[in-house]
Structure formats: structure tokens, C-alpha cells
Length: 299
Image (cartoon, rainbow, N blue to C red; front, side, top):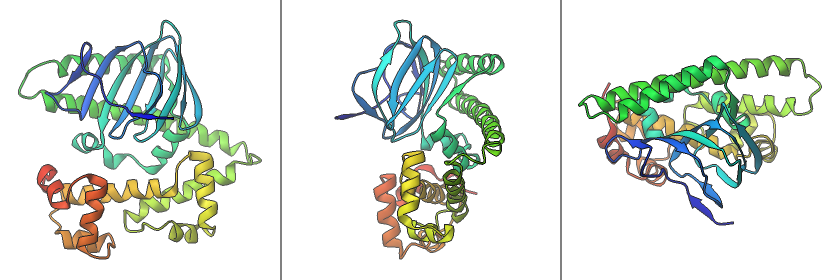
């Protein structure tokens, strides 16, 4: 199956700051393209406002209906779309760079990422719906304004929306933990606990450990078994999460510290600055120095 690179649309009911693709807000999305799609750069928040939709998301069937929120993770594949005639939704597209700009990236844990992967659809209660609708309308209104402070206002609003969504997700997570405690005989519970421990170890390593074998050793399991259960439960390789937090550690040091390239390379256990530079070029699309010059905010 051919996979299209999913990109934010342009035209009516679509808003962005200037010509930037880092943050795009869309209203009245009544149709979804056919075929397989994968966004290489954006995470997406879908708010279903009318009707129903069904599609495959990384091999799992997902169904959404009115008042559902669906959270799409970058690099995930969607295909086989079916929608009701009255289907409609709103969308917020954002890049990882934008998450740094609104200073929320450090608040997102791998536990949140795990929850998002396992439960990408959230049914909003009445209070959540009113809150999200208010924020969305305000976001659209402000992004369309031409004030010199527009970008700061919009990012402040987006940060607030993200925090509210994070709060909703964690509330659901707490409920899921309570349910799991009542399901000790659940055959998948052991696997989920191993995954939770793996996620904690990856987060605690702060980008300093990048070998699947080393994490497996700390968990007292084989690398093959770790890969198998991650694929089965999360439909992801261990290396995906390791890379995610390695990049997070690199980006933080380049953006918010004055550490030299040599110091960052040593701190994150790269063999040498040259290898560190090649890693950044491959995964960030630019050299460490180029990234710092573009985004550095100082300490």
C-alpha cells in the first residue's frame, strides 16, 4: 500500500501564523482523503463535532463519533477510512518544535505517550466539550488577528489547550490504573507492567542509553521479548521510544543551555562530537550548531 505524506491543507477555514506549518488550525473537515496516510512532521488533535468515522490506525481499527477527541502521533499510519454523510471535525496540527515553543514538551512523559498510543480516542464529557470548544474558538479568533503579539497570544492559548488535554488524559489514566488493579488475572497485565518499567527507564536515562539490549538487561528479559511485547501492545519498536527521548534530551540542551557540542556529546555518551553531529543531521535534519542558531533561547 502506498503511503501519502499527510500535510496540513490550505484554503478556507484553515489558519496559521504567517506561512508557518508549525501550527495549523482547521475547521469544518467533512471529508478525509482515501488511501494510506502518515504525517512525518505533525501531531494532530481531532475533535469530532458531528457524525462518525472509522479507520485503521497503525493496524488497529479506530472508531470516533460526535464529542470524541482523537490524538494522532507523528509517524503513525492511517488508512481504510469510512465516514458517515454528516461527519465533521476540527483539527489542530503541531510540530515538535512548536511543543518546545509553548514550553510543554518537558511536561509530557513517556507514560503519557504510552497512554496516548494505547487509547488514542477520548470521549469528552459535557464540561470537557464546553471547555475545548471555548478554547478552540478563541484560538481561531486570535490566530486570524494581525497584532504584533499574535504569535505569543496564540502559543499561550495552544499551551493552555495542551495542558487541558494532558489533564484529561491523565484523569483517564488514573481510572485505567484503578481498573487494572481489579484485573490481576488479566494475561496482558504482566506485559503492560514491563512496558511501564521500560518507559520509566528510558525517561530516566535522559538520552544517555540508546541500546535496546541494555534496557532489556535491566528488565531481566531478552531484547527479543522486549521488542515482541512493545510491538504487540504498542505497535512500536523499543528503538522508537529511545530515539524520541534521545532527541528530546539533545533539543533541550541545544535550546536552553550553553553547553558546547563537546560537552553535550560527552554528557549523552556519544562516542565523539562527529558521531553526535551525524546523529543530529539524520534525525533533526540539521547540524547541532545549525539547530542551536535557529532555536537557542539561552538560560
